[in-house]
Length: 346
Image (cartoon, rainbow, N blue to C red):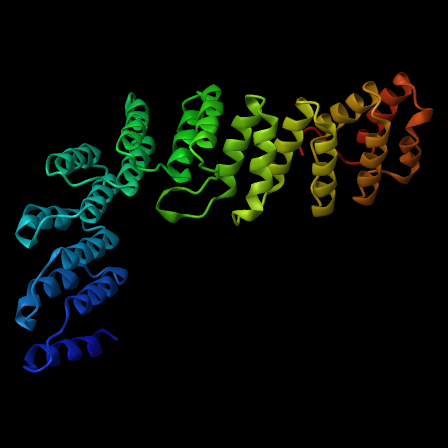
């Protein structure tokens, strides 16, 4: 494939009638970037005048993108040193360079580039702030989380919309820093700004079940049952399938909040998927249903457990909750979870 491409480029160079457009070289360099051919991309960029095609910021942009894909961060710095001769740099070019510095661990240089943008009156975009905030949270040094929040505020001051990816990055960092109590404030701010919560990580990566589980745990830890249930329901819509841990987090959280009807629905889904709650948590749930006199819900729960082969046939009579007093319910629940392979560890 590369041999054929070289032949085409050679013909274009010698052809005096056809003048290749800049977009052609941008596309070829994008191809070199995907092939991790940094040297080829640089060589083609340098040879563009020989094809009677002049450089503009567009071809610089495509070259930097190719070098970023190749991880050629030092080469990106070389291009940066001569960038002004190709025209006034756009925000897109700075975004690529900032992303490159961030990925290479040179975050101080990324911040300097951001300052340079401001000095040259190049307006940062949402991608600019998102890349910086993601980098700050990823490095996670003392004081950098505060700087990440400061950048978020700066974006609003500049009337730049902060998307859910940025908020998700901040939420994850708060959780890692042991500051889960602040998550509810972030979620409330998102609602006020008209930004629906999800866990799309930066750079367009799809939400993953690990990040969802992390946020679900934090939300239920601060007793925000409604938000937790919303996020859980939102997972399939975002292309993320809940796993057994997701269900257990939601089951435990809603049970803790005495959201019995919602817990019963979650349990029914678990049984359908072949998942089981932890033995001790199931026992607590059934016991609370007994103590609160939620006999109708208890009957539905036992029915779900039976359908999911989690309840022995000998215990089907427990669904007749009207015959159970508080003591017998305690005994029944204890025996029920003990006879059906449910342990506190599984």
